[in-house]
Amino acid sequence: MDLALKGKIALVTGSSRGIGRGVALALAAEGCDAMLTGRDAKALDDVAAAIRQHGRRAGVAVTDLRKPDAPGKLIEQVQREFGGLDILVNNAGATKRGDFLALTDADWDDGYALKFFAHVRLARAAWPILKARRGSIVAIGGTGGRKPTEEFTIGSSVNAAVAAFAKCLADRGKRDGVQVNCIHPSMVETDRLWRRIKAEMDRTGWPEQKAREEMCKGFGITRFGKVEDVADLICFLVSSRATWMHGATIDLDGGEIPTL
Image (cartoon, rainbow, N blue to C red; front, side):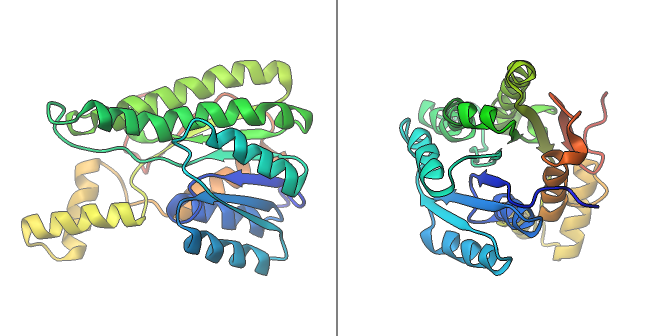
């Protein structure tokens, strides 16, 4: 299936590892040039080298998107290096788990700074150039926004806010010609998930396979997701095959969310 992405320019935040890395590589494989962002220069350079093996251009921006001026500077760099933007994937951000009564204001501030306000500032800075090229935004939230739990008060709140913000942008996007969608992934095979699996192994004494099986049962999912599951969906969403997909929030969850 030709997704007609060759020559498109994509900005993927949090692209040094995990989902962001997988998305950047998948878009490059479909013919996109990519701007990569994160705070690990070596990891970003490795991803950039892999993208160049596809014959595509890759830019690197080592930046902390928590800083209020960082998103605007990042979009300026995209303009300088690539001359425009077609795809913005807002992926960066992780939030702290724990007892609500033990979580501090600083924990909440940090969770919203990267996972929510960076999305807001990047969308605002990128909107004019996305509008000029009738581009796409994909926001990565998480199923915690659909199934809040007591140990994930920050993440659940932030992910719900990400989805609501994407819906608002989609409403404006109908007028300005910018496509906006949101994805709520469930548990995806990343370093972060492995740390949770390892903690469960340490807590229970189970071998890895047993820990994986019991965790999947607990989450009500058929299996843990793969980075490729998310990356392939994003490639489709921003392609010429999905232009009527607008304002959607998709639970990519292996059956975790039981409600309509």
